[in-house]
Image 1: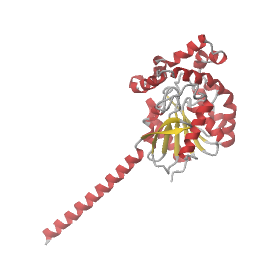
Image 2: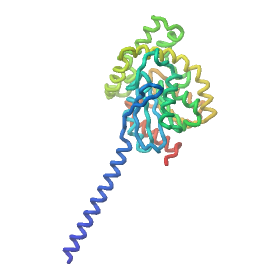
Image 3: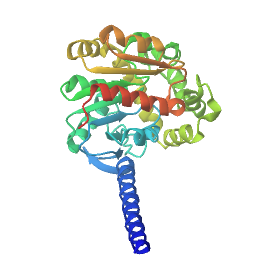
Image 4: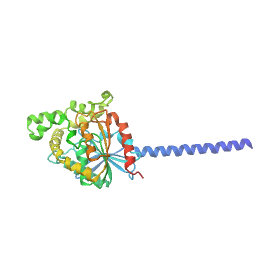
Length: 323
């Protein structure tokens, strides 16, 4: 009888263990499925817009707004690091990544228009409350969204996303100020240097502690998109239109003071494009902003992506309610 009892006990224990393992595996699989990045295209104002998405649809949304010359590709490792608790969306602007790149005759390549497209994309997705991660070109796009819809933006995470004169490093005087005053062939030729592989690599490698650790997939992917026929004209149009962003800075500052969004400033302090003084300037208008200066460069995610994800998660956990 004792032997039979032991056999029964062991069998039932084995079944319980098996059930427990199965349950654990199912939970692990569900967690992996939630954080799995999916890839989509949708029609927005007649254009094919590509976007990456992950996370529970009913969780707080984070919209990742990329910079030049990249696309949602720059967030390829950040998205799964956030998507267990957050619904993450990362669209490619027209002319970037896998989105359509119509000619300048078919699409007005201005920051107003890029913001319109992202705004309509979010409307189409039914996203009415979200946090924004802004980097480089993502800043003028994101601040346009925030000033249009202050009730929608729950938090701003700026990673080398400038909004202050102090943040405009000598890079701007070297390449763009003269072009803004007169886009003649001589000034255009200087700006075109920003479309070369050397310039793209500089943005990914300069100021990094360990530039040899940066995957060449990052800058070579961007360069392949820059080199598409006709894309140079798209980029020149946006370089020229950027002159309309600094005059909007005072309105953005007023928005920060009046609407008081929670702000995280996480900045690669060795950025050759946007100086760390631009990061520190946010504290004038948002004294309680969280400021983190990292010992890295412009595309800080390439070197400090894991740390930045942890900083974002801690920041949002304090400031954004997760059901």
